Length: 296
Image 1 (cartoon, rainbow, N blue to C red):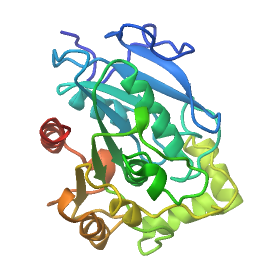
Image 2: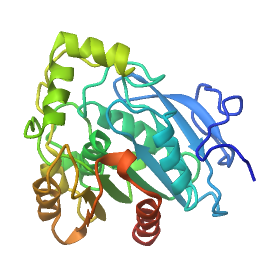
Image 3: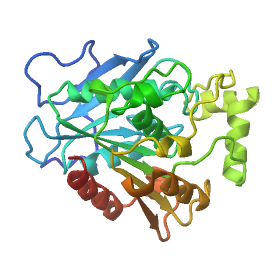
Image 4: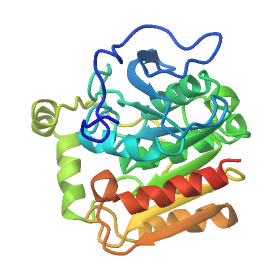
């Protein structure tokens, strides 16, 4: 057993290389640059997990929050927790970490997730669970709506594409997600809007937070998370939110759960704050158990 910190990524083993899995699925750690549907290069990491499951079983695809990336300690901790249940793919959204492009704060990022899910299936995994946090939580909702069994018909979301195939997911976990766009009702969200919408804020994002943010407004405005939640059925959906979330109050998860209807499940976590940093080991264990039971 390694005595390295949980979630440590062995850089010499996971050096980026071009291409996607071919032929017999490889059950060894791998790192590559994927191409999103619009051509942006996305840094992605595959780890086979420690559960002993065969290559055709479960893989988690983790979508981090704004200003995160695949190498951040809190993302590696999440990956290590889910590795007890199956393989794990982590990646950096556009504008984050080693990925190319600039962040659109939840819009074009759905293409990044679709590329990561397709890559995960290329290793031979029959079941995929997408788990997103904060911004990533909104992305997994839209991804499931756009790339589900009826994605092409239900998309209605500009140039995102749609349809199922290798990019579809079998279960969705959305943690600390907003329900609607342009929310400014809390101080952290007002600061975030300054960061994203003002030139000075984008400079702070680039040099202070290692996040490159696109200067253009959304056009068209993407499908909202609450609209997406209503289009995910029959894919199982778990909405997780803390009752001490400083970014989004409890009306957000309740709106998502109401939109999801019978196929959705809502966990309101006592004492929990926001996203990855607030997700303790016990919560991650329960999410892992839920994923194993609900991913088909």
